[in-house]
Length: 130
Ligand code: CMP
Image (tube, rainbow, N blue to C red; front, side, top):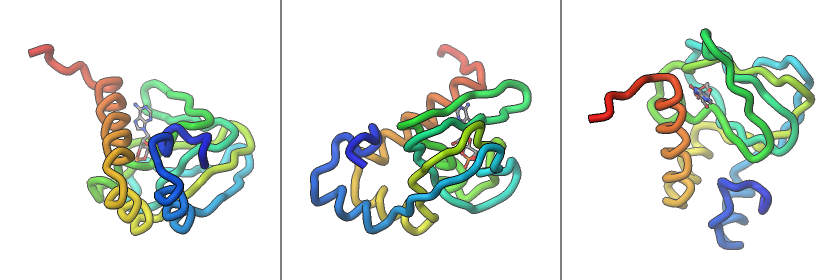
């Protein structure tokens, strides 16, 4: 877990807490991990392998150290995109309650996730410059 940028600022104690909240999961190539429009689900952190985010139109590729599935868990809304594995993957997975526990425990992680959400939003919308 030390190699995951999301946890880069964590103390040993914080990492030990997070370790009690995550599961390590392996999936095969071609597994659908998030399906656009569905509600609920998990938060995923990629340890190895790659996934493709289908934004229809457009695709984004995610790899080791990156994460996905945060948007539907933050706003309890539907998945914004379909995400599929494009190779065998190993991931850390948190359910809704586990994700909330980790965000409540660690403000730095919450800010990193918020930053990713805003970057992803900017990538798909032309925001007025002011
Ligand atoms: P969520 O909406 O829960 O499920 C689909 C996920 O795809 C979403 O969370 C993000 O993690 C990811 N995603 C959505 N839009 C983008 C984007 N523009 N770039 C990278 N990942 C994205």
